[in-house]
Image (cartoon, rainbow, N blue to C red; front, side, top):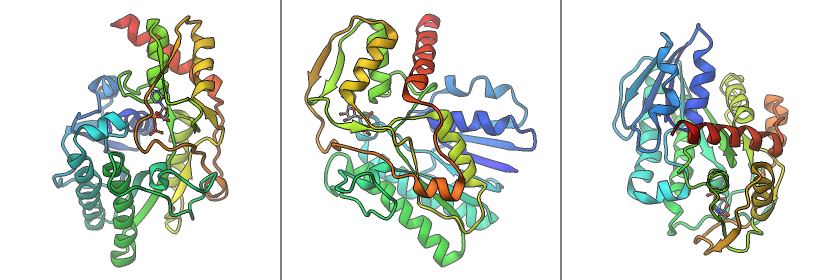
Length: 313
Ligand code: UDP
């Protein structure tokens, strides 16, 4: 199997490459423009003879002969995708077009890494796939949310119009080793702040909720989706339905790190969704998948990873 992973040096992409490369029957092309991906994430994978890193931006077309394409390329944390919003939109739309054309040419399957952000500030809770969402088209999150929505549309149109094999997953908040400590997301921020003895930055009153999925669970779900039968196109939600407020998360991080850091409240970013939790009924039925790692356990592994990074630095 010749497999392309775009965004392969990023948090999810590199965890996925690690899994795929361990099967000697696979040849893995890891594509990344290193905008937010890090060589550090794939350094050990470079030792594998069936792994190849190509520095490339998927906004530009590329020619590779492949059987499967995991399209994970796109900055995903709010500060990262808002730093160059026009390029974020291009990554989702032009990147998706380029990957769908490649799949069409080689009769490959494309799995699109979509996002719970397509639901926006959801008014249905928890969010099933059938919910169309509540997204601001003109706000600071729109480049990401609307870009990912357009990418989904392209997938389904290529499927209907040209018969391209597609799979769309909607990923809810995920955390774990290989997430950039400076990513800006809440778990990487809280853990690194706690380990450095700095104040934990709680945005707003901290009563907004998120559901956090440990990366190993997510990768298993993604793998099952890619290898499901061709009629399973999705969209399928993947995430952990356990729901926590940011205050509860902060307390757990302080407890596990033994840190004496304090909480400081900062302004809530614009368009920050108030609550988010996946309805994973479809993933259970279609993929026989559900997360196994509780937040407490996943946090412990994540804390260990960031401690290791700090010690090496
Ligand atoms: N958040 C926070 N402190 C931080 C970073 C984020 O309180 O240092 C909040 C943020 O406002 C949001 C939640 O944590 O309500 C999750 O944010 P994140 O950026 O991790 O992901 P999002 O789900 O917003 O894409």
